[in-house]
View 1 (tube, rainbow, N blue to C red):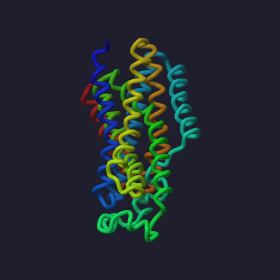
View 2 (tube, rainbow, N blue to C red):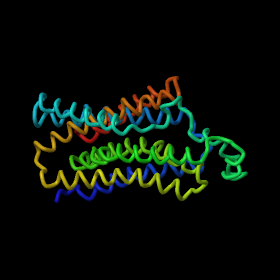
View 3 (cartoon, rainbow, N blue to C red):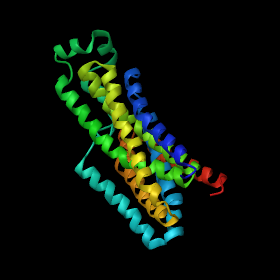
Length: 278
């Protein structure tokens, strides 16, 4: 068994719990700051893209050559593109950066009067519609989290430092996803337990992805096979950055916080790789 096996699984589990953390924030916070969200999502995108090109793809090219590594990279891009078409999901911030809490009215007012009372008076969307939306978002995010869990596991197998970087970026990305799942379920049912439960299920798919990667990757682990996987993971993470994180970041704030987040994420990873002697 690879020396980083349990460490990789632990990192994947930690990144998955960030989805539940996002739902907890949804229970506690009236409205996340738009500048904070813009910077955080941009930062996550910067980390993912820099790691993808400067570490994952570079390592793959070094092992199997430019042509094969490029095929693997675009294979990862294509895989995520197909998943996104077949099972689309709504990433918070993609529709003007509004908090989904707005769909069921003011949070403080809802807590004071009770969600059932508000829905009986016609405020916000009807519970059945909100619940259906929340469950569909949870399903879509869960399916998208499978390859992300594989990315975290694979990166940690390559090196612990790389795994930590990928897990941190994916965790930041998972927080608003947890919020997107929890808010409509909470608004529809008034149950924090159900909101947290569905958020945890969608995030748990990330750990499932890591376990699937372990089942498939570990028996076949050779330097050449790992290089192909790393190239595909690079494509996967670049797609997530371009399709979700950067558009979501700009939707929250159209000033300079998104770009500042991307640059900061890239700079931090550049410094980290340099200090680690990679």
